[in-house]
Every structure is written in structure tokens, then in C-alpha cells.
Amino acid sequence: MATADEILATMAEEAAETGQAAEVCTIDRCTRAVTIPEALRIVGVETDKDVTRRQFRVLCSYRGTDLSPFRIRIHFMNANKEKDIYYVTDAAQDGEYLTFSWVISRKATKYKGKLQFIACMVCDGGSDEEREWNSTLGEFTVLEGLEVELTEGEEEQARDAITQLLAVIDARESEAVEAVAAHGTNQVEKVKA
View 1 (cartoon, one colour):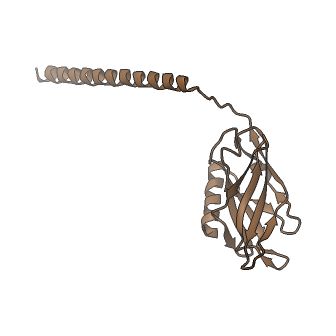
View 2 (cartoon, rainbow, N blue to C red; view 1 turned 90 degrees about the vertical axis):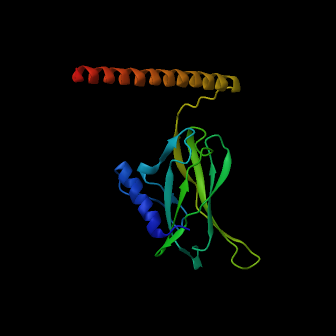
View 3 (tube, rainbow, N blue to C red; view 1 turned 180 degrees about the vertical axis):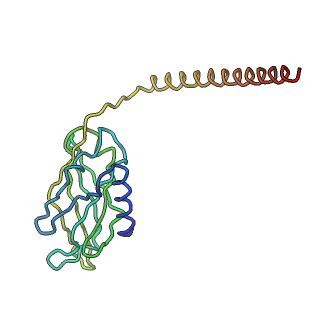
């Protein structure tokens, strides 16, 4: 599990790259509402894969229950109504807060439109009864992109064309190196004469 300092350092690094202040999505522990800053609403373009991370923060205590030992997962539904789960691996306690992140997968960005999700926290608690705490529905946006899928025959043709181009480049490179070497030798001979 990542430490709070590691998570904050990652957030600061991402903020520095984008030129924005480090922002996080927050979850109200009582209303369970997810607040997403405007700058974080767009999570990518169709078929992006594992390039966007969204940070979350929630108070650790809920009506006498300590949420910090709970396992966290994100239940999501992409714009085509396909559902899946992301298992959080970097949950950390930062004072009174629990912080974690979600790396947005290709399944989540497979289609343009609304990417809906909840944060789900589960704990066995040492008894026979499993405890579960959920946020309300949050929503990100996936922008339209263009994905080209080639048939197997088209992929083979593309590989063949690339292989042929690389062979031509290699041959031309050898010719160029020989020509430069010959020219250099001629110039040296002229200087000596």
C-alpha cells in the first residue's frame, strides 16, 4: 500500500505536468456524494488505456466506523453500459483522511460518453458479517476518438510493408555510410597532396 506522501508526490507531479494545482475528487462521508473538480471531469478519449489517474479523498470515520481497514474498489459502467470493477491498490491514511486513486482502463474508455462509477469499501470485520460502504454515483466524461481495427490480412500486409521499408532503409543507410567514407577519404587525399 502506498503511503500518503507517495500519493501526494504523485499528485503534485501530475499537477506540475499539466500546470494545474493538484486537485482530487472528494467523497462526502455522510451524503456519500462524489465531488469532481471541473478540471478532472474529462478522463480521456475513446480507448485510452492506463494513462489517466484520478485521486480520491474521504474522511476515515463514518458514524463510528473506521473505514481505513476497508478494501476499496471502483465499480464502473462505461458509455455502452458495460460494467467492471477496478481494485484499488494504493489506499493510504493521511491524518483523518483516506486517499486512493483509480487508473482508468481501456474498458472504462471503450466508448465516448458518460463513465459512471461508485467507490465501494468492504471489510470483513472479523465477524461472519461483511460490512460495505458505498458512495453515490459519480460521473466522468470520455471524449470521442477514432480507433482503427485491421483484419488479420490487413495487419499481415501492414507488417510486410513495414518489413520491406525497413530493408530499403537499411540498404540506403549502408550506401550512405560508404559514400560518406569514400568522400572523406578523397578529401583527406586532396589535403595531403
